[in-house]
Length: 200
Image 1 (cartoon, rainbow, N blue to C red):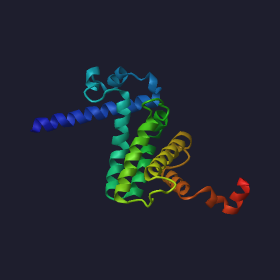
Image 2 (image 1 turned 60 degrees about the vertical axis):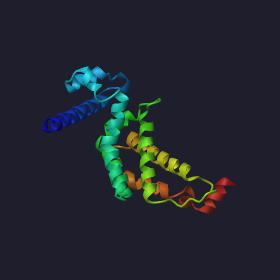
Image 3 (image 1 turned 45 degrees about the vertical axis):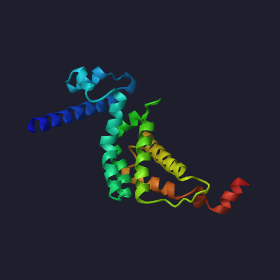
Image 4 (image 1 turned 180 degrees about the vertical axis):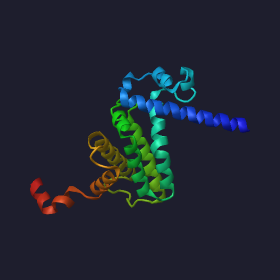
């Protein structure tokens, strides 16, 4: 039993090491140029070791997003601490801002943006399970569309912040900025009368 625990911990450490070395490589090089051999060389393990934990480098990226950001954020949401979870997401991303700025450049079928959207969607669903939203049947927008829109808004907010203003705007300021945007419409800002003039 003791040996099993030791082996399990060793495996967790090896997996974490591979993830850390991948992260360091992403900051230095283009994601497309990173090979599995580069990751294993940096970690000081043989290539087959990588495949004990991951299928490919996309899975490393996905695992890191969960481990670094969403595992703890999800726990906070389960404790009905949604605001703290939102802060946690921004703070965790800010802690590795250069890495996250680079992975946002990963496009295509396994894009980082899609991974982030998927995790946020799951988190939003957990929030709604504990705090039902008040959208009646037949309203202009369905519950699912609303949740998807909220997730897309947060993804784009994080992307804009980390890609353009990560060094000027702190995680705390970014959270406040995001909350302001989602709680105010253009009409709130410029007034209904001005909006009517713009439209007409």
